[in-house]
Length: 233
Ligand SMILES: Nc1ncnc2c1ncn2[C@@H]1O[C@H](COP(=O)(O)OP(=O)(O)OP(=O)(O)O)[C@@H](O)[C@H]1O
Ligand SMILES: [Mg+2]
Image (cartoon, rainbow, N blue to C red; front, side, top):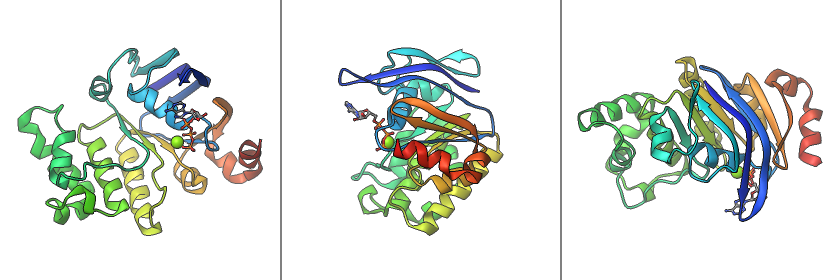
């Protein structure tokens, strides 16, 4: 489904990702782990088309995403939840969802919102609240709902749980699992590696812009020293 080959990224004139390969199959959850500055968010932004890649290929279902702008990437079936669960503070929850549904034909916008509200029923009573008044967990739910509006084939979530309360994290983790169970591939970037490794089938450990390790998530659960070595190196 999502195939990334030899991805290279430069930021501010500095090379930060040097040849990363990555695959996410339909229904699969892949964890991308690694210490601060390893290049995880840079990869997310490059997949989204938000920052340029200097080299490499990104394909969805065999079709290249090279050179596509963020909205075209999204239409191709790749949805991103960026780091930091940002919503538009001066818009209501409903309008935040509408704003993210602009790529849909007008007649499909409200049905799509209804559909994502069945995934996040706790947002229904919050629809008229302003974005700025929401808790971090509610904001993350809005961001996930926005990403799910266009029925993506692959969902990329940068820092699903960062700064959120354990009960909310459990809810979000359940949603990730149910989305994957419906056949969506998920790339999960997490500081909290225990959570990511519990959800994922496969994992990738980045270190200074390179793949330090990749393989079954089970191996990293059984042998935590592999991960520790990457974080300490
Ligand atoms: N806007 C930017 N301009 C220039 N360099 C940047 C920018 N953002 C990040 N970098 C650099 O890119 C490298 C990778 O950073 P990135 O944010 O992708 O790492 P990360 O793995 O997501 O880290 P974290 O776990 O802290 O979120 C770092 O060396 C960082 O300093
Ligand atoms: Mg990051």
